[in-house]
Image (cartoon, rainbow, N blue to C red; front, side, top):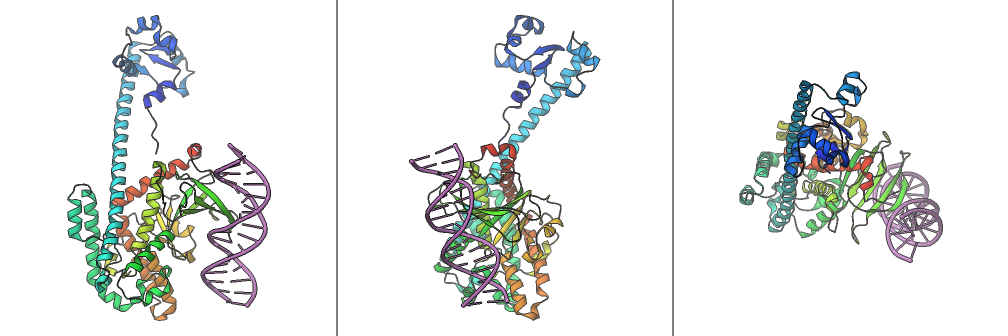
Length: 464
DNA sequence: CGATTTTGACCTGCGC
DNA sequence: GCGCAGGTCAAAATCG
């Protein structure tokens, strides 16, 4: 998100001819310091204050569309009436004021985005740490089964209070409290649901052996989870004419394949920024719309990332972590009907989808649609993929497992549809968190901005 | 000349 | 077991 530098500069330098108190002023060095100009303007530009004063009186409007009118010629020529000059001055002063206001607003928004990003990263770090901590501490407890699938807030409420009282994450606390309250709601009804279908807790991609394990969580499972995090994928759909979106990382192509059902080849890249970095990505154009570039990231970087890459990396990493955080063997992975209370909440569709048919959990961030267009998502994705409109990736593995189970247990046939509804409802509960959405959107925006054809020259990607 | 891309061969998992 | 498709490897080609 590179900001344009000084608007004054860009405006001023792009206007070779300007009006100064109604007089023509050619903006080059000769005119700038010429004696007659000084006489006309009765100003001596010796310091910044004077320069600023001059700026306030220079009409930088190009007025490109009405240049040839006789009236304007007269203005550009011998000078205009005092009324017209004052009018222009007022107009320009108003525009300048608006410009300053917009700059201030822009700066404020940038600060807010930075703050949200910082909080998001801090929250994510805490989440990972707390997950590890709690799993080690409670590894032997059978009651780990009582952990709800919505395990974003792994820390207890007391822990949250302690952490957030430090003042760094006060805004996040409300979010966590919201999640916590949802957790408790789910917990109260969880037992019944689990009795109905205990095996639903285990997503397919956590391997079938997991289903035979006890609900307790041990170190082996933690390591397995970490390996799954590495395998979790985050896919980004974005419109781009370039062959790759710019994510700030350096990639080395190691393969290309023609995928079935898609005339466009799929390219395979490895991160070449760090030696032995396990991160890989696949780039392929959509078969339905070849202007859409689908980039799938896998793994976590093992090296320091440049600032330009942090947004993407943190987003994909967080998505992958969250993907797994809701699918631990110890978590029941169940979606209780209570969460349907949130089913009508907005902003639950289109921003992200999740392909449950993939061998590994894959969350898709769809940047090709507007957030309000709720119906196109399902149209764009093959229905057989069971792609759900999700921002949170937590639920799809469970959904897939459910769909699989539904084929195994015919008596549960009606559950699939209701489960899909439940998934969407749960998604709505998560996606209405404006802070996570803001952080996600900040990262996504940076990606979109950098993927613009004009800016691809700044891209570090060395593909093609 | 080192880094990167290309591309055919090979490996692996999955469904039949 | 066989075939298919996805993913990876590695030697050759290309690039800067």
